[in-house]
Amino acid sequence: MDWLNTIGNILLYLPFLIFLFVYAISYKAKQRKALGIAADATAFLLFFSVPASISLLFGVQTQPIILLFALLFAIFLLFREWKTTKEIEVIKFFRKLWRFYFLALAALYAITWLVGSVYLAIQTFR
Image (cartoon, rainbow, N blue to C red):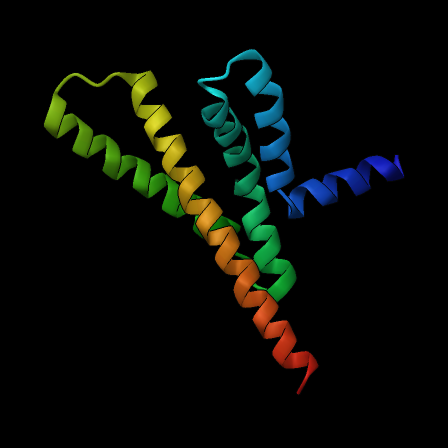
């Protein structure tokens, strides 16, 4: 069971490995939709990975804040979609929302590790 915990920790802190793995598998089956499938699978992991990375690097708990912003953005986007189209296609809406979450969380993940690396380098050479 120790190896399972190690694999879970690696995937939690390195979600791009899941992205690459899912992309490679889905590219064999569905070449056109491979990037979307990989982004969808990784977005779920990023909801846990970003707060864990921020907590590891800076000691700040951000999971509730990230989930609150995700919920508020979903409400905002749903309201905007309702005002412009009047007829909401649920699957299309959720796909758009989930892809936005992937982009936002992937950018936040990259920024977190970039700032964390600089911060740790400064602390080390001080």
